[in-house]
Image 1: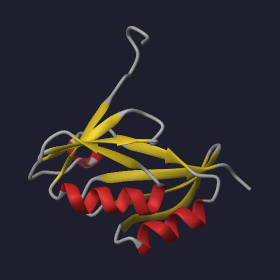
Image 2: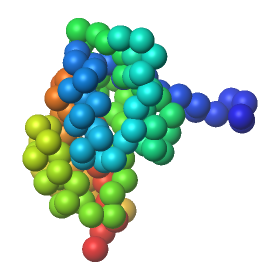
Image 3: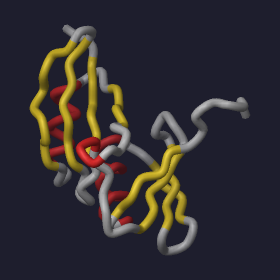
Image 4: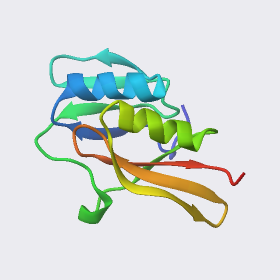
Length: 117
């Protein structure tokens, strides 16, 4: 393990079971439960987990924005909406790529980016 590097990220979830189903369906993540109030995610690119909480993580309230990469941005957007996520900002271009923002079923804001075609 490297010292002084980001090692783990934790995010709140009002409904752990719902978020586990959502991220499994949309992004293919796995989960390992550590009791009824915590689930670590696996195969997500960075280690982390969801903890039971009655609040959510949004950049507007000062939280960091977690950004995922996809080589099929439109497909990712369709999977997000099909699985019950809410599009917060439609696909837009920025220098170096395109991205969209979404809310997971627990209200946490995420973004997904892809390279310019």
